[in-house]
Image (cartoon, rainbow, N blue to C red; front, side, top):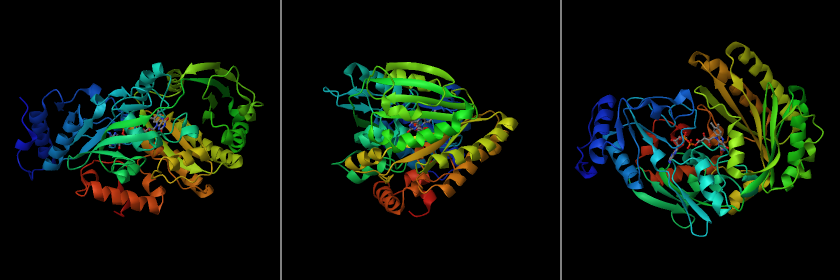
Length: 484
Ligand SMILES: Cc1cc2nc3c(=O)[nH]c(=O)nc-3n(C[C@H](O)[C@H](O)[C@H](O)COP(=O)(O)OP(=O)(O)OC[C@H]3O[C@@H](n4cnc5c(N)ncnc54)[C@H](O)[C@@H]3O)c2cc1C
């Protein structure tokens, strides 16, 4: 029989390892063995993390099924002063963000996986541990979808708290800009709502401020009237990469800035470029809006022109991602739209990526994500967010990196580190998009001093004991900025 949280022993001054074991036992006593899995935990639960860099075995895994249980767990964590990590989908490759070894507690949100659709299908309430593919699948019979992750297996919680870039962000803004409200468990165990009307400062901070304010146990998102989309995927040979990058910039400055139904997902690598043309309504043939790319010779067609359900589009994207049990990383920087700049940076990156590939077999990509000025505008219209985006168009560069051996971590990561440092010298936009940031980056600082001051105020107001700064193992935490 589970004991009440109120009957727990008082705070201990034990060594961390002992405190963690005692906290896990106390949690199991209070919440039951079904929700609290003591070490040694099942390897399959550890392996949920996408990257091997994050596979660590904690003192126990706790799998809450309600906000009340999250509240009880946070009280136990505070009482025993134990380190913890929160994992929703576990797609972050940053070690210690959504993973923790001994001594420490992993809060695995996978059982908070509700998908509940309002009677008029205008709002969907989603648990943080759900995956975006399941959310889109549930909405499909209602002929609506949601601004969320672009791959089916991506987690809801981490993506929304970092902002969330979707196929439909050019038209509708970031995923977080489409939040209507959220349920949050604060560091002291209090369960609160956050919306434009209730705790509006907390609501604003959640839309890109990361894991600094509380554990979100429910997200309410407005749906959008999209069900089927046009998609086509072509492959260009390596010799065409420069032409493609110049065409991309021309498109971003032209039709891509005005036709908000159109977007592209382009992944360049040493082996060429895979380019998806996406239009957010069904059409018979590739829309003229993509004319900037028409003259580039196509090496192969990966997906012939077709109209797809949104979930099917996500599944096409999943086919391009390495889901193997490997070490992974990503990294972020922003840039103005400039074809010559893209080409110069590609050459800078490719020289280093090729050298490291020859030594380690690491695969790396070079990805320019188009950010429309409308995306920033939508954020402002929906109450703003901490990213404080400049409402002139820009690009978010990122890279996905896959490699095998821990011994190669430094040499493999040196390519993207050097590339982002070089981008910063050549770019006039400082933003680092949190969801694509690597462990040593500082996205919160890149939001600007006004935003940082506001998120600090929110953190101090809602987490005065600094539970999420002191006891959360790691993450994009405000304490690292040294200003609050
Ligand atoms: C292959 C791949 C494709 C991607 N595609 C996209 C994309 O299309 N768009 C995009 O925006 N991003 C994308 N990303 C980045 C992705 O958004 C981040 O990795 C994000 O963190 C994943 O969410 P998650 O729930 O899996 O996070 P997790 O890895 O579980 O957690 C990430 C961080 O969020 C915190 N956190 C998680 N849940 C909660 C919660 N409920 N309350 C408080 N804190 C919490 C964790 O503690 C951790 O610090 C992609 C990543 C990969 C690897």
